[in-house]
Length: 94
Image (tube, rainbow, N blue to C red; front, side, top):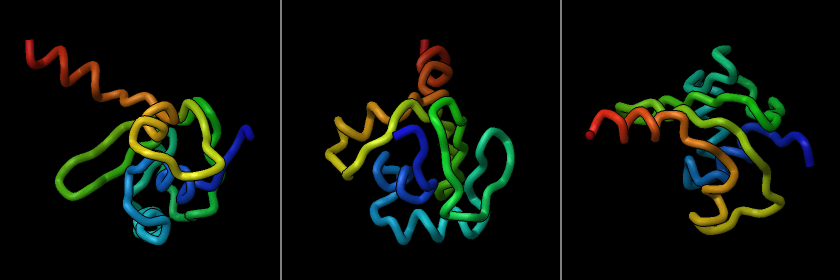
């Protein structure tokens, strides 16, 4: 698999608890792919895409690394993306 629906990927990566929540998040304009706002939950993401998600009072910036056929536990979800803010947050704490 080299591409996956955006709402499905967000759900598999455990960014949201339900796929319908992922679709609503995208449709409401809270997701950007490579800097461009995306409003279609069916938009295909591919490996290497950078996805920015506005959640509550924060923004998560994730780089798509892989895909899953089924939603797994948190450990399985973690291998689907690279958190691009993680290194910046760690550097700021030193």
